[in-house]
Length: 398
Image 1: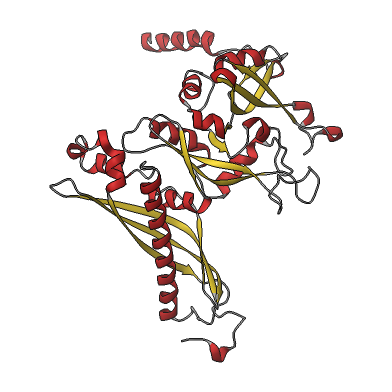
Image 2 (image 1 turned 90 degrees about the vertical axis):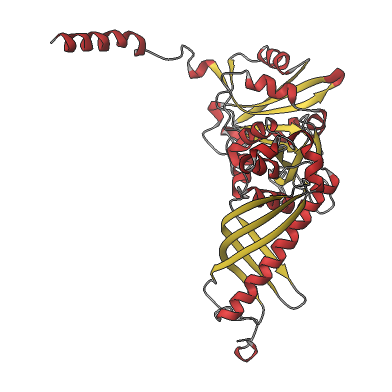
């Protein structure tokens, strides 16, 4: 009885701490901040832009009466904290960044370096690590945050959705960037956005036109150990990097010959990296890429319903993938000398004692390493038809 009395007393006493609201701020007293933008300003300053929801205009896709469901606000300052204080002076509600999903960095700002920005973000208790972060190519973050998107409300989520649909890292990008920034065997990367362009190379037309201004994924930005942007890889090279790292979610391989072409959509993708280090510290890696998927096009006279023909097509996809990924790795070694693939982390995990003697000069060691790429591709589904409709039955190889 004494134990039960003590238990009831503890439960009753705890009600004083769990009853009522957790936060005294009501929703209508807050300005909900969904996306952040960072740009360079004069005198080594920074300009921060934010996309903020207008709740009364979020009932319809474009807002009621043709009005937007969001607005963009910005301010300049000596550092991010100074900018946010200046932004708050313009808002009748308290700024709340707990729902922020996207960060966009102007290319000039990214090339200048991100340490100050990351420090301010890490110290904010409201900011979630599950955030997508991008560099906007050849433009400012302020411009990117001012765009609408006809399919998403609010438009800040459009960049996140596009990234996920492309097979990228999605809302773990910021966390992955921070992890790499604190690693000796992996350099940081960040997906790149750009404005969709018309045929004449200019930015796309006005909203409501046949070619409205939109954002699209354009590749990946490479950062050095000081978190300064060093260069860009295109979209295909970005996917090659993610495949080597083992975090690519989907990928379509397309091969074209003089009289035929074919496409394979991979949906089960993985990779394995095996290091080999000699007594003279000569470093070699064997990268084995694996993928399984559906044959979405086969515009040739090769009937893949037959086993030998299917194996021949698989071999063509393997050869193509192997060559392309090998070229991307070689490009990064020669042009940047930065290990964005995580080869150093593989040595760190598998040969920790040897890693101690390599980590201080790893970028140099990586650029000199011999890296061999192999591919193992399987066609698990040939679709509804085995033979292309372009060819007669008599022309089909067996």
